[in-house]
Image (cartoon, rainbow, N blue to C red; front, side, top):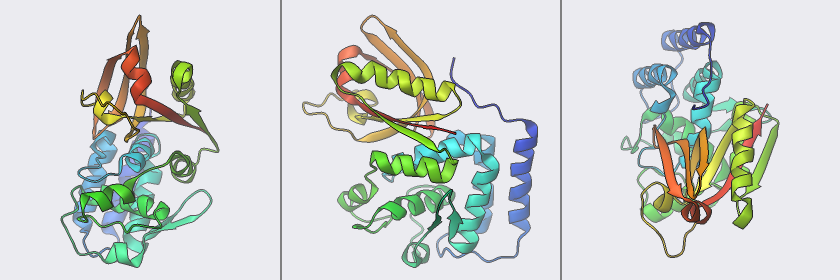
Length: 264
């Protein structure tokens, strides 16, 4: 059974009311390439279905996984963050103010390769950790990938700042610790926390074995971790959908690198 998040009707209705209040606000937006009507519509779609969160054609898998958990676990805070970002260019994290630079907000290129709402949040998060490369929606693939690389400590920071979870851990998967890292990740989500996994997308998601595997993609663990002999399976969120990963133990050990967990 997939680990689900139970939100009562009061929480959902409160998030919808926050969207209505935002829609009626006369405050101007501070993003040159974003439209308020589009942002409002996309907020409603994500509150109804968190799987609408989508990194699109940008290398934002890490922050997208954290944002997905924010939407499905704390929808009111999600809407408030988006409104603050749109109207003021920043939002209050757990311990710091996170802001989008004037350069990012002033970009007039509407070819974002993803939805406007997701771009606004994910580009801001990515920029907050990228000091060497600017976040440009249509930079070369090399530059976008370099700017979009997400490290484990950045995941831990976003879990703290967005979700407000004070306990974060890193579980290295290496040789005989692969299963233990997954068990720790499963334990975290069963206890109400979150778990993000670092994998080789080509090997686990695309069925394209690599002679020299490398960590390339973050996914959100949803549950259903099973080991049946030499077969391994588990459910994840990635690229705006739920995917059941099924592989043999050898490939699992080769293409699973680490888990990052967060607990309240």
